[in-house]
Length: 246
Image 1 (cartoon, rainbow, N blue to C red):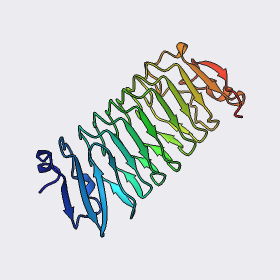
Image 2: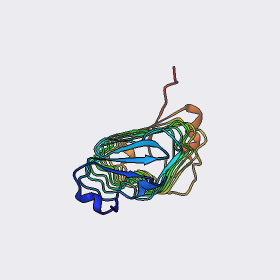
Image 3: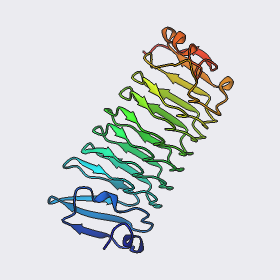
Image 4: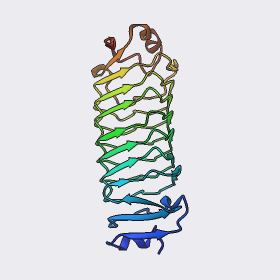
């Protein structure tokens, strides 16, 4: 059985033995498979189709287009043994609502979760360092996004077109934010930034293109206001002092 095509015609569980470590790039466009059992190195792994959780074990990679366009996938829990989420891994999983990413994942690759319109909850791993180009583009169900302190880079178009985000929290480790990273986030009313190391360039990157900055409040620590006011992308927000952490 070819998992990437034939599996979409099965309603019963499918089991594979002797599968290679990167088997998870073969279930693209599976519309009806309820779950898949994979046997790797005598360890049983389950990729639950409507409620997927990859099991613990040897470090693994979720490959290109692994579960893209899986229309029934509602929840994804990625454990600590997964190190890489490849491009388009969960692209256009239209029913996906909740995502939890393990602590060993450091980079989310390009378009990995793009156009998942039902996604409302993201829990990032504690050791993630960067989010790649358009990783969450078009996730129109997101309303609140918190970038953890471990992340240093948010790439071009990362949350582009996420039109329902109203509150954005940026962790203290963020140094760079790419072009159009939050363009089209038209519901934004509050940005809370703890970063004092942001590379705020005088030339515009159109980070917030389409956002009504006069209706959005940017909360900053007093010592960081000068840095943000010097940047074309940040200067036009209503700036208020960030309450000190208790």
